[in-house]
Amino acid sequence: MTRKYKVDEVFGVGVGNSTPAYVDRGNLDSVFKRGLEASRHVSVHGGSKQGKTWLRKRGLKPEESVVVQCTTTSTSVSILEEALAQLGVTAKLGRTQTGSLTGEVGLSSAVKARFSVPFLGQASGEAGATAKATKASESETQEQFFAQTAANLHWVAEAVTRSQKRFVIEDFHYLPEEEQRIFASWMKALGEYGCHLVIIGVWAQSHLLSYFNGDLEGRVDDIHLEWSNEDLHAVLTQGAEALAISFSETLSNALISDAYGNVGLLHRLAHEICILEKVDDAQAGFEIGRNASLTDARRDVAAQMSGRFETFAANFVRGMRRMPEGLVVYLHLLRAFTASDDADLLAKGVDSRDLLKAIQDEGISLRGSDLTQALERVDQLQVKIQISPPVLTYHRAGKRVQLVDRAFLFFRKYGEHTWPWDEPDEIDNDLAGSAPLDLFS
Image (cartoon, rainbow, N blue to C red):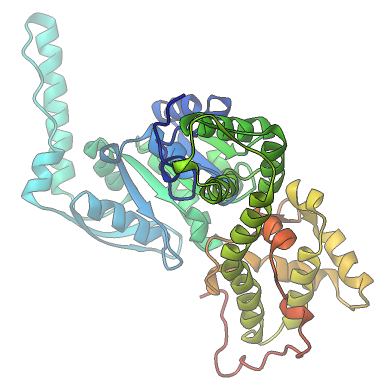
């Protein structure tokens, strides 16, 4: 048994998709590649740290893709501008009141040369006549493409297609819902013009793009990334083999239970265990059992998470302090969600009616309509208060609040925390006048 890797090359948040602990669960690598080869868009989504970007990078090489990383300030227009800029196209785009794309584009000589259609090979007879006709048609299309300065979706699609790259949008969830809806409306036209996209983001709802635009039904391969306990066990087994060690069955089961179906969290725990056990210096064949290192690893990983989740709760409250109204709704919403059972949060989420009942059972007078309005703003509120990636999301169609970062459950169980609503100071909207929070701008 020979050790070929160091711990940092196998486990941890920063390891690449070449890690020997990578598991192709359910042949998703093949499913993703089939989607790329078909004339359809591909949507890859799931919770935070579930391997979405790993899957994309294994199926698409950097030189084969144009990748636009969304931020909290991105718009449907800026996404297209950035993609074209990566191709060397100067574009000043806008959007009409009806949602149509408008603007101007420009091509340099170097870009024109790169986008040019190569000459067809020589042929004779009928085949030669066909080749000449095809060449003439392509030449005419190319001249029209180069001459055009007015931007539209057809031109954008052709520019991406001529680059022979796949258009990839990462972190699509950072777009405001209205911008997501507009981009989904453009995707049908882009696809019909031969430009098929890969959309990647954090959301739990399957077929979200079709929800925004019914015309996309049947035009998008929807890949929802989830990990079974068997998949997670394979991650540990393959990683351990690469390190020439083994995890006892008891320890493996404990780590998988603590991961709550999240591969990123499993990697963090396995990495911490291996560091504590000094695996890089241990003899090959060493078995790690369930011992004090597990307790220490849980404590250390939970401590690393404290900044994110305490900031989430604090900023949520701070955001409420900046809202002119609806303060009490958001406070009790987050408190009731945080107190929900693991089983509900791991399944389809918490039904808004159950959430309302939990709030009312605490003696709080709250109308269902007020809760619904608050829930519909939860996603945008997290963007506004810079919670990245989001912790929870609202599924409008199912009327459920869903957890999209399962590490929250681990922190809730093992972390040392004091939630804002447990503090003695009364929370009010004292910042609504001096620093108002507008969720719709």
